[in-house]
Length: 479
Ligand code: RVP
Picture: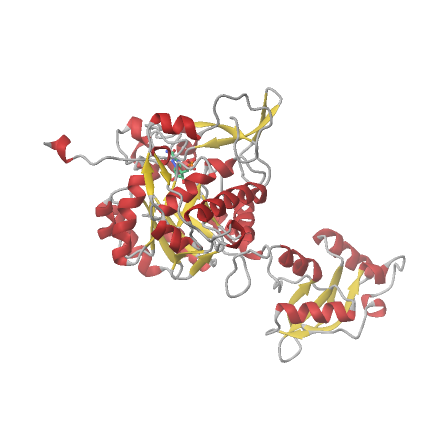
């Protein structure tokens, strides 16, 4: 009887999307997606909260491309807060911690400050009021003088409410690289620099908060309220409660308390059973995936999991009843899997493996047989658990003896270039898929996508066959 009640489980390789009548061109589709009430991404991709995938550099790259990085939690609270702040500061158009100098200092000291902080100019400040500005050019070969003698005295300043475009216009018209921001009394409160504005212009698809800062998420354990509060205070946009099994009733109790204490949007995971959704309705979004991860051994070690397409579809149906968003986490090998995950009901996907090989991932680079690889490991691997990740797998109790039962492996993935290059291919594949099924946006893909279940012969036919590939395609790696 038990077996009669068993449901059938399908994963990415078991299904394909059926082509539909279409008027949609890949280049015209809208791939933006809402993942929580306050966060809309421009591409439906998050980077995994893993210590070989997401630290601040990855999070900056993801947000610049329109996605979202989730900073892992295998570090101290202070370190993780610092990481969040680095993302927030990465493209701040008004810098608040301005390095200034007094007019009575020597130019040698001004030069020293500029070199130390790797900047070309300093606002000159007396009683916190801006009285001048001095740059390397003003100083050249004029040792022994004071800043007051050589500074530019007619300084153009702007008020705090200045908009980016306006600041840019003022700087171009006046041919200046630096624009001090002052309050009503003329006291310095910030600085706008040309190099920061140029950086912002470059990333047209970036996702930002209302202050113009890049969006960032961070992972916490369900029981670490202290960490969640610290991250929230540091300005994190989304808290991702990260556990191998979020339908743990003790964890749920702790998560509810946590949710009440933070302002950030709240994603909870992972789950693979729709019944879990009924107990997680206090969250904004749920993350789906028990065991699909490329480095994950939960299904073989514990015998537990649900093939990912079935898990996504079941959870998404239930989540829709409560208005919760869904993130499909793990098992994505090709861009086509992203299309399938969304068609099954996900609002966005989370990637580990496909991003671990990028330049911005924190994993170590290694050369094997003349080819470049990057380290990638499961957070349930021995190495990651030794570093403190054990309680994601409810193995904190083994910490004393350090005899863990791993649910992940450690290894390497081929080096894949920059995040931007990888995402270009992945989003390109998603756009192509949306064209085939006639979906103009993510919502339509979720509604219109129809699956065919395939056999192993169908899968074999799907991949290149009966050929020796001589030119590796950028979206079809041979390893
Ligand atoms: P993948 O993209 O297939 O490499 O999967 C990444 C996901 O795998 C992560 O986002 C996480 O949910 C899961 N993971 C991380 N560590 C482990 C493990 O050690 N079992 N699993």
